[in-house]
Length: 360
Image 1 (spheres, rainbow, N blue to C red):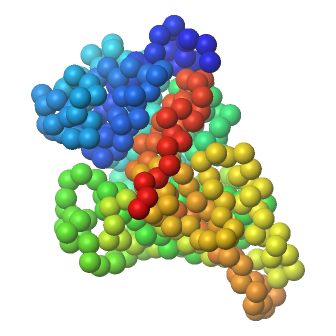
Image 2: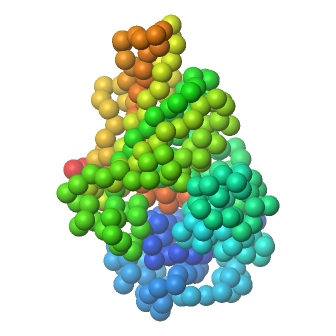
Image 3: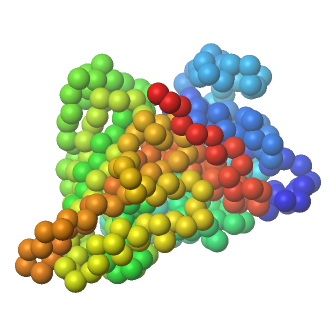
């Protein structure tokens, strides 16, 4: 890498501001960016904890910066930044992101506001009209395993959702080969950190620590994102039946996806498809001797994928199960945004992202 980034075009570290710095996504962004050799974090923006040092809000980051949380206007933040990471909730993020784009800044948006291409679909799943529908389609979808070339040098990135990352990685090897047709069923369990830093009834960890609960069955907002991504990847004739489950853990997603294929397909060939799809991908582990589990990836950027094939045949079809485990906050959130930033900057794309998960 040269000493200038493709985002800033300047012979110095890329100046990055984090908007939404007090949330869990903000914490993960800053955990990576504050020690990144090609990044200088310049501003920490939020609507809460104003004036506090970062280490008082996120205890694990104490001593890494003297910056304090501020409720600053976009113009002053943009004056100190080449790139802005926006970690705000969907429905809130769209206009904030647009303001930074209009100010000439590169932007990575961690919300769902610019992932979809169709305003009507956004209205159906987010239950509001998109405030800037003309801008849909102007962001690169930030899944490096699918959009690596487009991310290099990009200036507007919509970072994927956590469920969308896990489910897409599980199913992508079959979508690209035209094997996803008809109904594809998915159940995926997620940890409490995915609900954000502010507790609410049904998401507060003490209320979910001893139970399992399905929520938003068939209506979760990541459903159209997954369908859109996989249809564009080569599966135009499928629909997703997705049931998310609130699980009694802090971090992680475990997705199990099942679909039917023609019984004439060789089971060994089906089992080999993820290995072919992800050959050379350093952050995707393709398993053959065990199934994915959250403990193996929690706290890391790694995804685990595997395939099970049913030997039984019914009506000329057999069932394939595709599995994936990720950390929802890292591979499914802020760490994936950092991966996109590395590609945007033109530095080593895996800079700071190869640390293994903790064990146990």
